[in-house]
Length: 319
Ligand SMILES: [Mn+2]
Image 1: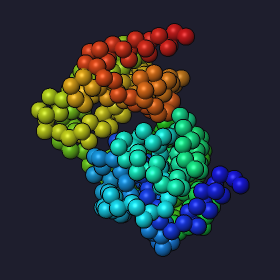
Image 2: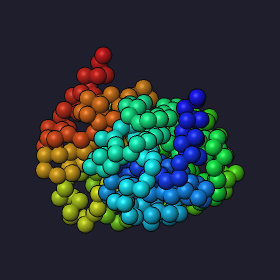
Image 3: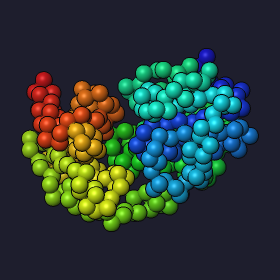
């Protein structure tokens, strides 16, 4: 049986599902669990949405957002656990044991680093977003797709392709987009809700990161400390999207933002342009991602983390 048929059979045969996605959930993570979940619910199935904290509130305009983590501890009667937009169960932290406890597990993902941990793994490294794979599955299974579902799926497609301008914005990405419009997605509404809702603390941190940015040897980098976040009364969510403004700098191919998450712990976000493959860098530090966008966490002081990442980039480039 083809993988997609195996996944569809599970969605049709079983009656209850817990949908999991990764920590630091992004538009594709939230969009894929909500899009799939809404469709299953309309089809009469029971669905739980389980996301490691903190859940990004900026996606609260999507229907059923308020169901995320509602009664999420009551998973004992659920038959199937599905992990979306994540390559392995490490990406859901302490929720891991919950997911691994299910008799039937499914992994729906587009990360090349995928560990194929589940009973059925449907992984398409060429898919522009996990929501694109969800769309394919819903169509193949003849499950319902309405405007709310297509908005959730479009949100994932839009964010994971960088508004259709990352290298993964291939022909398929536009075809999936067109299909979602046919199902009722409203791109202007979604773009407004996702891209034009900056908070003041976010814009202050953005300004600070840009002021601190250094560009050397086609590497652009900057950093944010805990005390910066405190000073602007910002939340962790307020640091999101800063790297995507940094990547607009000309000439840089590697873009890196270092964020102090706690004492001796630095979260590193990487973006690659042209031939730069940042996934290789992130993997060296136990992280992962895509060629154009990846991340890792380093248990060091800020300056050490910066030195280690910059020297690794320079080393890898020489090879
Ligand atoms: Mn994704």
